[in-house]
Length: 311
Image 1: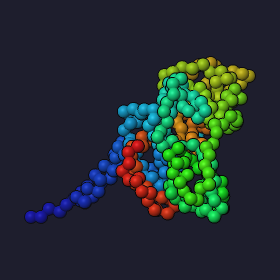
Image 2: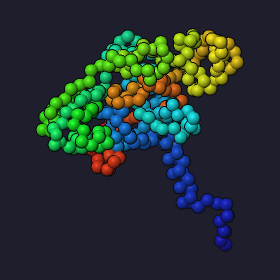
Image 3: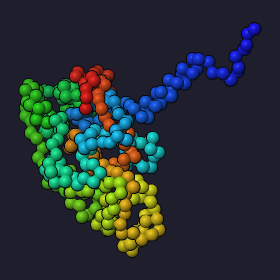
């Protein structure tokens, strides 16, 4: 006697598909996800078109200074978290660190921190009149829209090794490195008149850590106002020189989560913590662990030597 399968029974192929879907979701949330690099802010550590494996577990096991992290754009706080742009930068300051840039060199708690081997800064490259800048850009793994057509003096993110290779090219007349900036722009975090910093000479600035309590005054409020109101979701108001948090007068504040100070490896070509402030811990997606491959996003021509490269 044959027994008909119940109508509510899931067929074997359906179970397998459901199990595969659950496994993929688990891997995406807790183990690994993929991000494609879209700009040159981490050049020459990362190139446009690099497909990067992002390890999820360091969010829980712990990050370290020098790690390359992927995180949601803190400035896009008018969007749901999952709809914000993904950014890739290197941790320069851990929670509780005091960070400072002196002539472009990083100091943490007063001690110098060596830069990444592939870290770059801005150099001026003069080309011959008949030279095609596109060929040079392809050689460097940079997108062709990095310079204007017909431009003879171009500004490129280079380091000493890259500059040395360009000097050997017949289409290059000369190369000079940009000097450290002494100008004081007014567009850097924390945007207050008391912070006369620029992108080469910045800080010192203390990175907030969960549980730390700081005094909040007219001087320090530009550093912390976004943390208090946006990232930790408090109602904040300043009236007649008095700060009120959730309706109560306050001159101190205790942080509820950790924060990080991040920099791009292309220091003169990166919008990072110098420009918009700290990265909240709950915005971090994971640590960039390796490059799977490179397929240039403007032409799908892979850059040699980028496959299965550890970071």
